[in-house]
Amino acid sequence: MIGFFKRFLGLFLKDLFKDKRQVKLGLYGPPNGGKTTLANKVCKDWLGEEMGRTSKIAHETREIQVKEQITIKRDGKELTFSLVDTPGIATKIDYEEFIKAGMKEEDAKSRAKEATKGVIDAIKWLDDMDAVIIVLDGTKDPYTQVNITIVGNLEARKIPLLLVANKMDLKKADIKHVQAAFPQFEVLGISAKSGDGVDELYAKLFELRAKALKRKKR
Image (tube, rainbow, N blue to C red; front, side, top):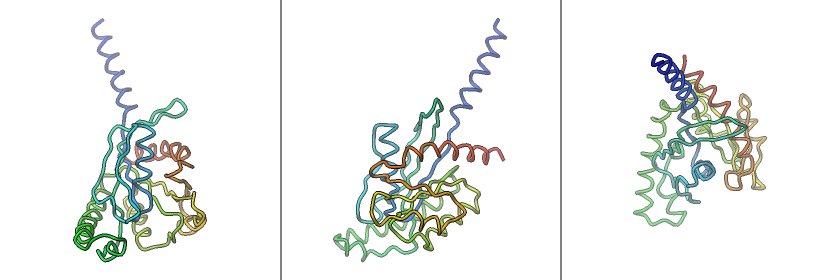
């Protein structure tokens, strides 16, 4: 009887851990693409709380932010993951741009310094990511050095990624521009602010998780 119980417990724990396998999901992209807005939407939907502050001024997020144990339930399935919101990737951060946005010089210089460190940290964290959502502003030209570099780094590391064109609720947004810039990927149009397309994104996360776990086994 004891032997049977041990075998049963072993199988139960094995299945339990199998179902609870987590992936570390990173949000990457240029500044003000809507990464933190999307992070807040995901956390609000599944944790009942937001993740970070947002601002019209670039580089509001200057430190890595992590939310553990986010569980999405959909069609009888569950997906548990850690969400990592990263600072916007930029090739140049000029404090004068913050002054033009209305900040005082001292605050602008401090923000630029913190933002530069944030970019370095975000790049370092790439090696820890199991999967990545690249969040692009659908109203802007996607064919930039920053975007190409981010995609190239992920492809080189063979990290599964989902490419989203955000801010599709705005008139200037055009998903076709993003699709033309990165034809090798499916592009999902969303509005993190209004929630449009986010349910479809949740469905895509299950596919992304499967790719991430397959990569882990190699």
